Image (tube, rainbow, N blue to C red; front, side):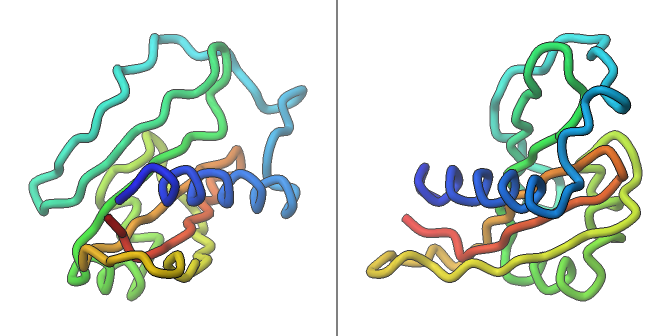
Length: 137
C-alpha cells in the first residue's frame, strides 16, 4: 500500500470522526497517557494481518489510530462482523462497542495488490470508524 493511500485513509477517518461529533471532547474525556508510545513499525499478526499503530500526540489517549492491511479472506471476516473482528484482533486496548465502515474506491490507474487496507480510528465512546480501500502499489 503506498503512502498516499495510507495517508488518505487516516485523514478520512479523522475527518469523519470530527464530522460525526464523536471526536475530540478533550475537556471532559482526555487523560494524559501514562506510558510512552511504542516505536512506529508494522507488526504482523499470526493470521497474516499487518498492523501499524500510529502513536497519539503526547498527553492524549484518544483518538487511537491504526492502519491495517488484510487479505481478501480476512476482509470478508471483517465485513461479516466488524465489531467482533476488531475486538478479536486486539487492535485497541479496550473493547469497541460499535464500528462504522466507509468504503473508498481505489485511485484511478492504481494497481491493486489483492489485499485490502483499513484506516481505523477509535474514539472516546468506544466507537471505531474504519475507511476501507484496496491496497495499491
